[in-house]
Image 1 (cartoon, one colour):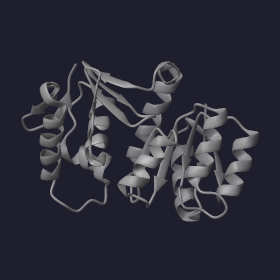
Image 2 (image 1 turned 180 degrees about the vertical axis):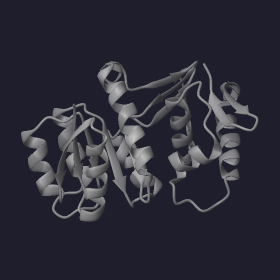
Image 3 (image 1 turned 45 degrees about the vertical axis):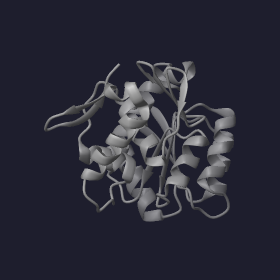
Image 4 (image 1 turned 135 degrees about the vertical axis):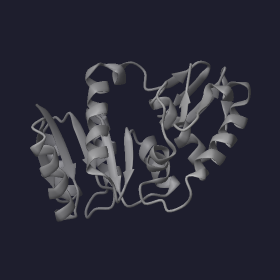
Length: 224
């Protein structure tokens, strides 16, 4: 059974997430009501995956992430109301594997955790954290994108959009799914914002931008 740590100061939300994971039958769940309690659990236990709120009394989720990364390579998911691009990129820079903005779907959170665990247990995270698609390479630790060895400078949303596509290479992602992954489930604008960012992303990737394919009636995917 997988052991998961959930650190969240909002009691009702923490219990909702914890109960959902417990009822799945696949997880042993430890809960912490704030950063200090979360730190004690991190220091005395080993976890397969961790879900961390960011804004908490005592220590923030960012602080716990830094400490946890010193002793473990387990997947880390941030679950927070801080949905600005700067905070999302800071989370990834600290070593988080996913960053979900509240409000969120429990089903999507659970699915993300299962996918991260599968990748972790297969040993992929121990080899190379970089994502590759043909000559395009994305380094999530350095937040750097290169195409045929040349650095490509992307805006935050363009970077997150490319990351989502590369994490799901060869799979079609619809506009709604990309909105959830990049802009958050509470985004209220048109899904056509995805199209405009895809257009900018392709342009910046130059001759390699053609690897991002449009699937009529489906969405987008990136190919090797």
